[in-house]
Amino acid sequence: MNNKPNDLLLLAGKILTVLMQAFMAIGAAALAIALPIVIFMQDKIDAEIAAEFGNTVGELPMMALAGVIVLALAAVALIFVFFGKLRAIIATVGDGDPFEPANADRLNLMAWLLLAVQAIAIPIGGLALLLAKWVEPMENADVTIDAGFDLTGILLVIILFILARVFKHGAEMREDLEGTV
Image (cartoon, rainbow, N blue to C red):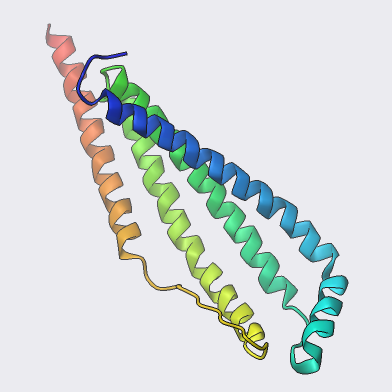
């Protein structure tokens, strides 16, 4: 391990990326378990809802709920891969060689992954609105959906694309320098 002052920062980065991947794996498992339960138990779920709220609420919009689960599962999988790529970049920084071509590719892929997550959020928001309309007639129902445009996420995507170019250029410059020595 390096004796640089940022070793604690690298260690924190490694720990956080591993934790985030663990959380994403747990979330993916929960969503993967929930999907067949929701689909195959629809009649029982509808019966429970009718028993609780009577005829004021119709049948659960199963396709909307299943769609949210499937899209959320895709987003969680993309984020899992994102943190794996970030962990690999952190490892190269710890090794003292961050300007390798693979890191440029990793950063580029990370940007595409986050862009895909941003795109997935749009239909999730639409489906969530359908579910919120279904919930409205229920007593004490308080549903809040934050489906707005995420400027921070888009900014991060742009920054990652730019950093990918910087790392690619840095790797090319290093190769040129090594070729002249």
